[in-house]
Image 1 (tube, rainbow, N blue to C red):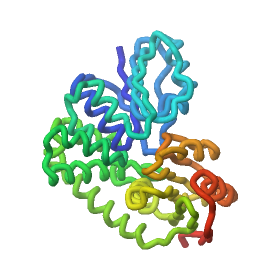
Image 2: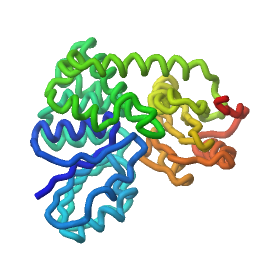
Image 3: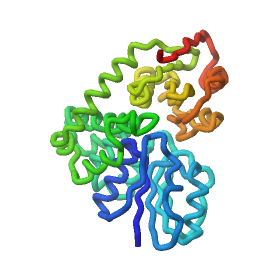
Image 4: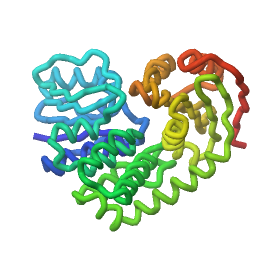
Amino acid sequence: MKYFDVFNGDADGICALHQLRLAKPLRSLLITGIKRDVALLERVPVRRGISVTVLDISLDTNRTALLALLEHGVKVEYFDHHFAGTIPEHSNLSTYIETTPDICTSLLVDRHLGGQHRLWAIVGAYGDNLAHAAGTLADSCGLQPDQVEQLRELGESINYNACGESDADLLLPPVRLYGLLRTYADPFLFAANERIVQTLRDARRRDMELALRLPPSAVLSGGAIYVLPNEAWARRVQSVFSNFLATMSPDRAHAVLTMGVQGDYTASVRAPLANPYGADELCRRFAGGSRVAAAGIGRLSHDRLSDFTLAFDRAFGVAMRCRFDHVTGE
């Protein structure tokens, strides 16, 4: 029997898998990628005699590949919190899927394992910008404020590392980062012993400083849209910057668009934390998706920028003032 672990390369995906394999060690083939690389299940060979665990990628996005695997006798275990659509009923499929705004895959695995490796669930939840849920778990572990801050920093740094248009934008491919942390049951020891943690933390802070210098490109009654330039730092910081904006203004929605090398955009959308719904519906209108509170668009063509702004405005509020400063990155 060959085993495959298929997981998102962000903090939630990595920490979900790490918890699972600490509790249930297994020699497996790893399939992952950048944060937006979510059509991963098609990389698994369709043949009998294999078993697949999937973590933190949308079932709906991977439906065709999933059905092909199931019909060929492949056993699939699926943990996720993104939009799933209709979940297939099949004897080879076990699902742990929940899409409420206050859940992430690391928390689902924590629940499945009865909290065996909860510190890593806290790291994953902070990386996914679920500060309240992460804080609740931290309280249950009796952590001190400085320890909570260390786990928050670690989660945000691991999440930051997965963001970019390709591996060329990243400081370290996610599969290599997972390889470094997989031997650590204690995230505090990982942070203390591995230099990559400080490297990621410093780079994230530098990139955030650059992002914070930019004004919003569109200001609407219900939120704001930012457009970042065609730079590697901008693509790396997009998700972290989106989460920061959402936390700083919890009553407002935010979208952060980053120009890619071909002139199109990727988009990270955050619904207001005070009313965390609608991000996935908006992004699905532009061939994107994810979860109700936080979603994204992998490719938004330049000529659809006005359409996106109008749709964002309708989803989250009535426009009061809108000005677009086209960012070329030149």
